[in-house]
Length: 104
Image 1 (spheres, rainbow, N blue to C red):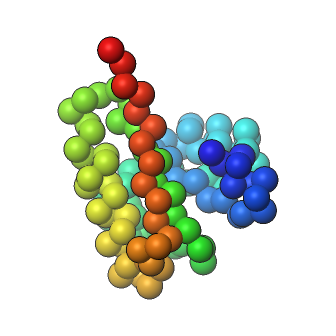
Image 2 (cartoon, one colour):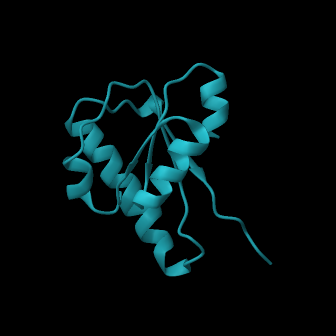
C-alpha cells in the first residue's frame, strides 16, 4: 500500500510497532517510519506529527485473536483522539483498512 501512495506522489510516514519494523519499512520503501504502539495513547501524545492530508490505519493483530479488539478499536480510537486534540483530524481524511487474513 505504501508504494501505491508514493507512486501517487504522496509523502508517506509509517507508524509501526517495533524499531526493527521501522527500519525494514524505511529500507524497503524509502519513507519515514517511526515505531509506536498506537494502543498506548501516551506514545502517540509524545509524537510530533508532520502536516498531512490523510491517515490510513492499516493494522494487524499479528495472528493473535485476543489482540484484535485492542489494536483495532483502542488503537484507532487513540489515533483519532490524539490527532483531533492536535488539530489534525478530519473525518474525511481517515481510512481504516484490515490487514488480517481470514483463514478457514
